[in-house]
Length: 80
Image (tube, rainbow, N blue to C red; front, side, top):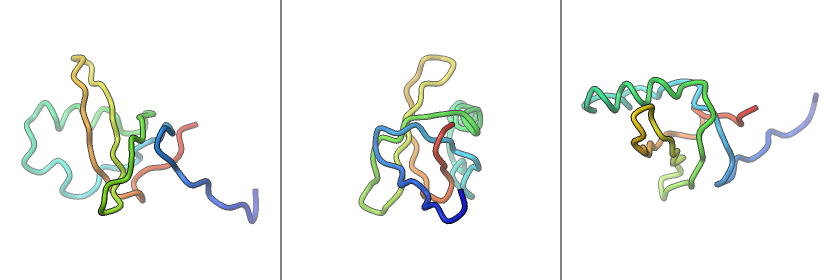
């Protein structure tokens, strides 16, 4: 809709990480890099915003391990 405001993403929303932020994967174990790379473009839960304004995302990888990742809000958008 022209002129409509972008919806503010709030904790509890499902969001999509549409791009991996530069440096996010640096120094992580191979399994974590793989898990994070696989969620790009898929809905994940927005848990909260931390004190620095980063979005905390929660997801479960194919191996059943729960992961939390922190990203700047400009790398996420509403799912759907």
